[in-house]
Image (cartoon, rainbow, N blue to C red; front, top):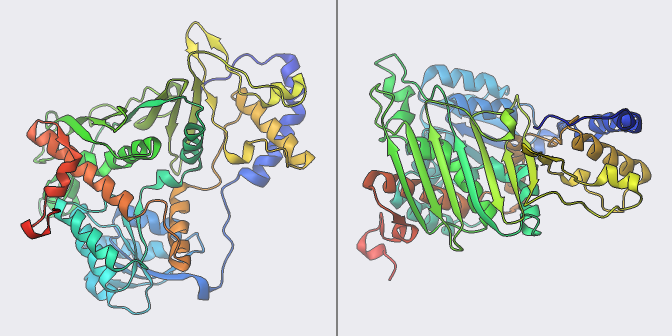
Length: 464
């Protein structure tokens, strides 16, 4: 986030008590959520198919949560199967055939964390076995799978299907969406996003395991950069605009990495939305620079631009906090003082402008909003935190990693029947964008999203 401006002695004296109060507030309110242990009888019994790096990552998170109990793990690659069983920490039964796992009657839910080409058959079979399903993005791989899964899900409305698009579970992205819906950015017209890496994916050196372990690099198994990285951020544009795109055009190339892969090593995409909004997307494998957050992060992030302001935003990782910065357009504005000039200094989102440009003000999460219903202590803590945010001394933090939040939400939905924030239609829409964006690059033409209705259907199955 931006470096703080000059802090005067008066500021320091005035803020000394605030620092103490805010530090206490962070300890009490802002630390990552600590999950209490629940009785095993109300933990959802689940199995996981796919215990590679992502599957192990999810299991490591779930092992520290109280939402479910892993009874079974499955992977065709023995080393990953053993690592997955260890990560679960619950002595699960290990399988190499996912159908044996699905045949278990004591599993209510299944997590699908396999290479993309296997998502649809496993999700389909899991639904037919009566399980609730969490599937990592992209939900499906081919056009015919979009139509087939939608039809199957309609026949099983009581089964939960959730997709791993965790930005929809981030407090930062939810707050940005609320700001946009309230008109605080004016008319939002553009979203620009990137996910650059250096180095990008590398081919496994073992010729016997090359295709199996480097599956992302082969079109037979993968949607390439669009599916594995872009799907997250393309979904952000859908979430922000509140609609799906109409049209996509793009250019991709296999230009710099000559190791036997057949997916692109760099892509550039432009999506057009119904009200003329545009989303531009870039993913390259030769440079990881990110021109957001004054260089505080690399690789990935999004810029949301409106007529009255902009937001720079990125999700957190296990080692880096989420960031959300708000910029006024065309210049600084101030809020009315809620009480006195002193209160205004603590509560207002005032920006300092210089010849070099604006400084972004951290977007405020719900816990920092002044409702007027707080106790005196809570209100003072909010004022203190907001003052520290304005000086760049402290930054807002989410209560929990969005990965944890999305997993907790999935298991809660399996218990209550509630609709997930990243549900079937959001997952299918995201998969459709991936499929058609890759088609646009492959065929060198603009592709309309209505084309999906005619793709992958038998003549009798097409819409009239």
